[in-house]
Length: 198
Image (cartoon, rainbow, N blue to C red; front, side):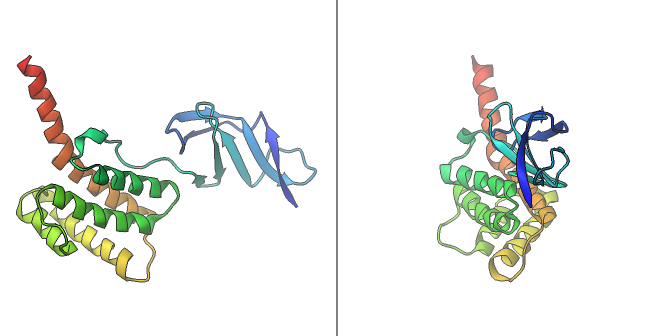
């Protein structure tokens, strides 16, 4: 029978805390091992973050909660708070290995972004993708990613499949580029112009 034991001398572990985002190194936490054994060698570990005091489960290649993936954008760059919240939701899904949910979030993000850019509401996903493309919101060398988002989003929504981590990371990376081009770069340019006018 396996039980958890508190230990202040675990093997030191470096990881990004999934709760507070701090890059930490700690050896304080719990280890799981056979009942009655005092060894710190077990099949699972719970490390305690020394910044936020919250627990992270680590076993082999698994970390729960995992670190946030993707760029941490300023909330104020977004025209609509819902778009920001949806992007953050997709990032949170990565922490809990909800890769198919990320595919669905990215598909919905494309729709929200298109509406922020002037597209009509209540249209199809294909309409929103075409709108962004035809109105030059998608850089020329990123247009293949539109098809990938379309395909992976359709798979996540309409087919009985599970997206993998590599798919989710790629989709989030593409969405990050689109957010940078459509929201962040104009915001930074505006701030730059404000500072040069002073």
